[in-house]
Image (tube, rainbow, N blue to C red; front, side, top):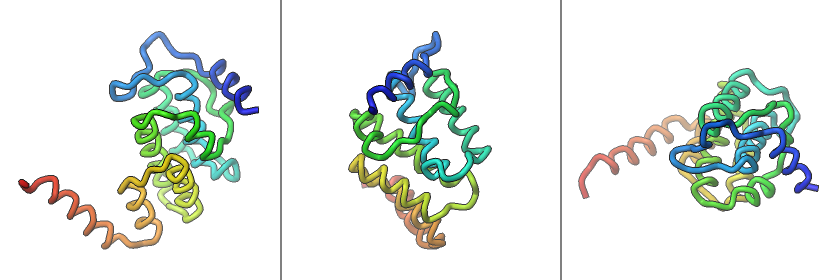
Length: 162
């Protein structure tokens, strides 16, 4: 069932004449479609809400400028975390894709607990725990002071020698 969806995604998201690189990485049409479908899944809460205008712009910008593929966002399926993890096997692809999923809840300017839980499911499927996911959880919970302290500590650790 999913392989036929993948074929449809590959057919509907044809690579442009430019090489589809994202920070020096090649994304196949299938990987690009999976990333975009994951972004749509998070932005629509698995199809339960309409795509917020800023979320649509983010997906389109990722599609056009980072992945350099063409296709209708509306044609993208809603996918689960397991499909996302299965289709994105390379660690660099997984890490970058998860960072984009983490950004999606911020776009509506109202980070909801259900969005954070969904992003967390994707992170668990990828077996990744980036600090940006912890930051998203803290924003949703209203722990901005704790987030500021954690951010300051990370920043100082990068700036100080040793």
